[in-house]
Length: 107
Image (spheres, rainbow, N blue to C red):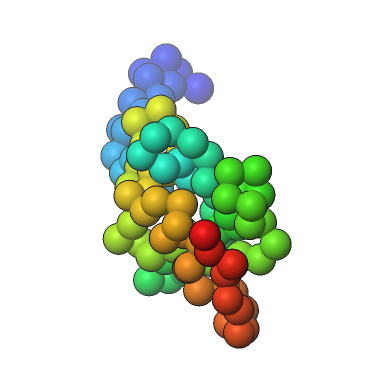
């Protein structure tokens, strides 16, 4: 392969990589609250953008079932991962997946 072809191929690949949106690239699945504490781990993303999240047992004393985190409550975090505007009490009342009757103990 000639040097001109190699350079052209490398230029085309670099242009394709730089055109990828930031959201499409892999992002750490850990969710943090506004204080910087880890509050959960995203298990999967639904087609509508909502996240299936496993709350962190150490922070929230949850972690026994997945919950649905609304897409409007998540935003990318500058240091990696995701950030939510919800506080710990609000996260405790997110609906579980699969849906079942539950009642958090609350404080």
